[in-house]
Length: 283
Image (cartoon, rainbow, N blue to C red; front, side, top):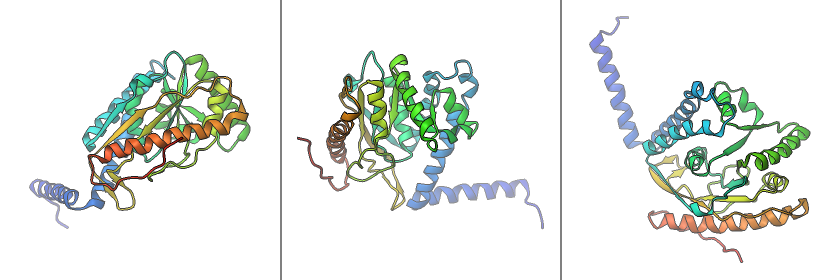
């Protein structure tokens, strides 16, 4: 079989590029998968390329500023604009448990927005992530707290230690109380884990609500440019609360976040053709 000449290779390469551009423009499905592939590759690269610099200050939350900057550039490239509101509500002079609604893998881009705004943020991840090197090493270097979900005793010990970290280091622990991704018009019931941590640390809860991603539809494979609001809500105190107050704290937090989710999403809808979301207000 004859080999292509240099000019032939160039022509094939140019034709492939033109085909990709054509598919990107005419196919929603192709554009959806292309953007998520780019998202995955870009995030993995941003999380690992700065590791040599992170080694100078291991376990520092400041290490996450570098990959967060990279993720913010990705948001611009994808045409996603985030607006942060409620700066005045950010907890000052103490640690806190930051609770956010969880819609998609794209929530990583939200973390990239709030990381430099709130400072001293960290996250919890299952311990298996640590072994996915070099990504796991990057996570460890910027202070990720790893938990063994299969060992209840170790998991509880980690939670108790996390409470100490929040108090002593004034850390902001970011958690998703729904426990799984949810892109519907209403928040899912909350899991108890985040509230056990909040009560154990006696630190306030900092609710953050991210408006619905109307630019993303996993069922129809749509991924368009879009706009989303990151709304930082007033803190909810936990000082003096015990495990017997856990249900009350969960209900109060979910009510506040659910109302804000509907309002914030409705505001975004003012600039969208997406059908209006209905929701109930808290009493």
